[in-house]
Every structure is written in structure tokens, then in C-alpha cells.
Length: 246
Image (tube, rainbow, N blue to C red):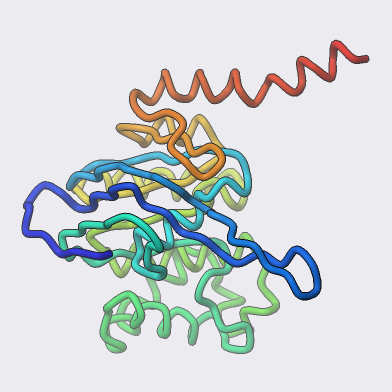
């Protein structure tokens, strides 16, 4: 269930949220797989929330839910009506269109008018550093080039709620510094950000609070330093076991 609220400080509130997919087990048999389950959390205006966890635990599903791309199968999501933009690797691009055409299309999908996207095209090209490639088809781009273009478009669209899935940190060192600095400016301007990343340094530098997702649920939530420390200890456990067996 999705509900709109007029709470000036609340951006999103998730209450016992669950999302499932059907997973095929045999030729004529399927089973329900809960990608996320019983997740409850609040996101306030101007907050930068970090989300961490191993691959396949439901982080991307959670961002799609926050963006309104999918609906919950269980629980309740309350939102303040703010426009959300999901920035993910290779998300929303048409492979046979050029980078320029995709920039226009994605900008319009994010709520911009075509003429506004076109007026900001030089800035998009400059930030993404795709000068000689902007008119090439997206299918010829590397994942890093796609991420840079998506990042540049999202920043020109300037949504109230920016959802970032593993994009900061993509590319060479110079672009990582540029994207991190751009994100800092966005945060200082009071925008609300949800950031999924495996990079603890980026999470520590940018986030006010961290949620650790494990097996589709909130395993730990709170202070950035404390949650990152607990997560680091958890992911190092298999290495310790392997070392003992050797």
C-alpha cells in the first residue's frame, strides 16, 4: 500500500514492507521468493542514508520500491510526494539510441522538459566527459561510461529525492573524486539522498546514518561508524574460517 502524506519533514516511511518474486524451481514448479521482508525505516528531508549489504540481499529491490518503480506486496509505504530519481548502472538506457538521445529521454523521464535538457546538454557532456562519444549508440559504451552519463543527467534533473545504486566510485580516480564532490554539494544543498555502495569510505564520508540489509531484512541500523564496523567484522568471518582450514 502506498500513501501520500503532508508531513514536511518525512520523505518516506516504510512499515513492515515485503516484496516477493516468483522463482522457478523445476520445469512446472515455482516458489515465492521474498527479496525483502518486514523492512521498517523512516527517511527524513535533507538526510543522507547509506544502505550496505552483500550482493543479492535486496538492496536494489529496496531502491526500486522507494522510487515507485515497484509496489510492496506486503506492508505500507508512506511518502511525501517528492519526486524521486533512481540512478543505477545501465538503468533506463535504450541501447540503440545515442548518448545524447538517451540523455534527452532520461531527463524527460525525470520530469525535465525537452528544451531544458537540451539547454543543459553541454553541462551533461562536460560532467560525463563523453565529448567524442555522446553521439555514439549506448550499446558501445562501457559500464563506466553509462554510469557517468546517468550521474550527469540525474544531477541536472535535480530531483528532491536521489536514489543511487552503486554508481559513485565507478570510473577512474578523477571521476570518482568529481562525483563524490558533486554529491557533497547536493547534500549541503539540503537534498535527500539514499546511497547504496560497497565502498565504506564513501559511505563514511557522505552518510548521516546507515542501514545494513542482510537476507532481505534490516539487520542493523544507526551510527555510520558502528554499523560499518559490525558489517566489516561480519564479512571477514568466512576468511577467518578459510584460513583455519588451510
